[in-house]
View 1: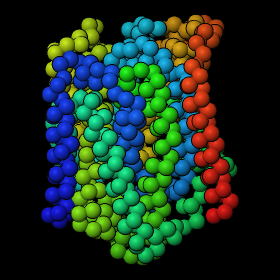
View 2: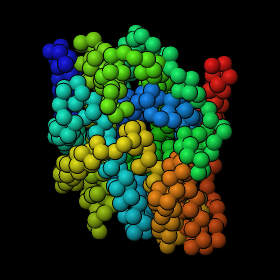
View 3: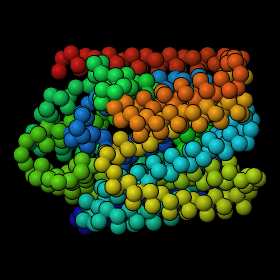
View 4: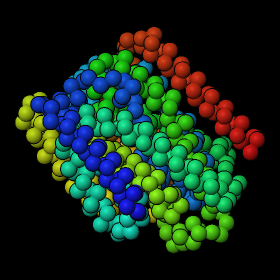
Length: 510
């Protein structure tokens, strides 16, 4: 990178770190550190969620999947169809139940229903899956920086990990949300810069026809070896997103920072409306680069022998002007640090609140222990990132594959807690074990089954076994959602219909 690039990157990263320390100086208790004293408006929480999604994982893995992954291309957009449907389910049923319970972790809700053992078990599942996924996020950031800085990837992981530990211990969830709002704008601008630079290259957007196909109704992903068909991406994506946004502490913790259930619903509504157009930005970068990679040229030569995940970093290094390159790198670095920050903050919260026999109190000692555990989880994430560099899959696949193994069974336990009145602790634990066992068996014994189906199979096995062990299933009485929630869900349903119609039109006219 040039001196100008270094200056832009250093100035922006320093500003984000300084903001984190400035916000963190006012913390006096664990609830300040983990929940921002429940004072965040819905629009700010939504910007934080969107910035987390439009992160280094997306900007590195998304275009790589579209442009270079065997079997990849625009089929990834089928996954996005599930988002508005998942947001509708969350704001109607799951988010109100969690918000009414309160608490620092969402697993406290499960203790009320199934006892402390179930709370601990679900928290441990979260800790295992999120620590691995956080390592993948750190690795994705290191890939970008290693290419731009001409460093080894493992050395870059260690450097970024050290900076992230410093960043993480200071500001807590409030600083994460504030910095995300700024990073959301910078990331969107940086992605537009990438798209404009990619569009200027010879062959841009002249992608092979197979990379432009979106909807695949001809395969099921059930033994045919086609992972990215319509039904596994829609149904598997629905269960994954409901579990990710509502039953994963790293995301649901943001929703618990809002002042009211109404603000939580606003955050979910706007996420369902805005995620698709934002995803199109980095997907279009992949479409442009797919055309460039389809003909001989400097980018093809530079990518010889490289993994697909290096496509965007190499393009950024060689084809984005100085200054603008620094802006994009700074946005990726800061957004990745913020994404890792929120994950580590939630891992710390789960460790302190869910695992001990006597949860840490909401006081200065809880704040101090929260920061200590943030450091420890930062070290663990760095170790996981060093392992992720040896995977053969793109980072966007890898992080979703990790989630798919766990999310279905976790969602099943929450659904039984809310809806199936006769299930007790034994049923919940048996269901969780069954769901995880089914997914592990599919992973090891049925490689032809799309990993997206694991979200469905894990959920179905969990609920079926949980209901059988816990007694005859009976749907518990639930209060009707407020009219505002019903209207918001209808808007999200209309958004899904509009997205599907647009993809059908593209399929017919391309």
